[in-house]
Picture 1 (cartoon, protein in one colour):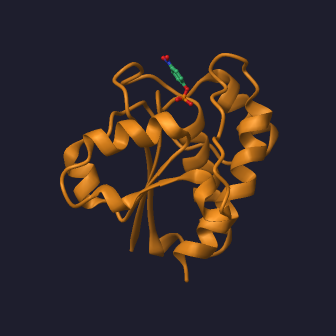
Picture 2 (tube, helix red, strand yellow):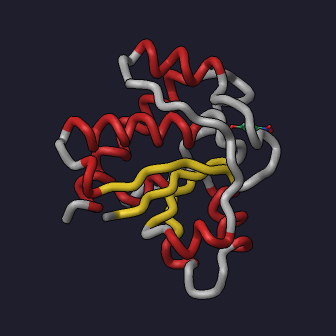
Length: 150
Ligand code: 4NP
């Protein structure tokens, strides 16, 4: 079982989209029993809140099955339990490295690392470009699935 945690700043836009898209990919590949997939925030801003309506609308448009989700902040125990923690941008990685208990830092990756690009999954919070978030996640998630099933 591979425990994957997707992480962004608020856990209402990018990381829940990543969680739902990756879960759909894993289900379609018949690999659901091999993965434990969740998403969390670095911040406490949106704890208890549902995903952004723009994220839900984009997932519906793309026919990605929705998963019940409320915002949660990553805890020290989550770092210990995870096999891999995938952040969306540079700030997420900086914050995660500050929060990580000793010995867990190597679990932290940035989403585009898997393609060898140093690039962010940009925050749609300000411009509401959830179609861009979907497109960016569609580039990296199949590569993560391949990497994590090696
Ligand atoms: P996310 O987007 O990190 O992709 O979930 C944001 C959500 C909330 C805030 C910022 C970004 N906020 O400042 O509350």
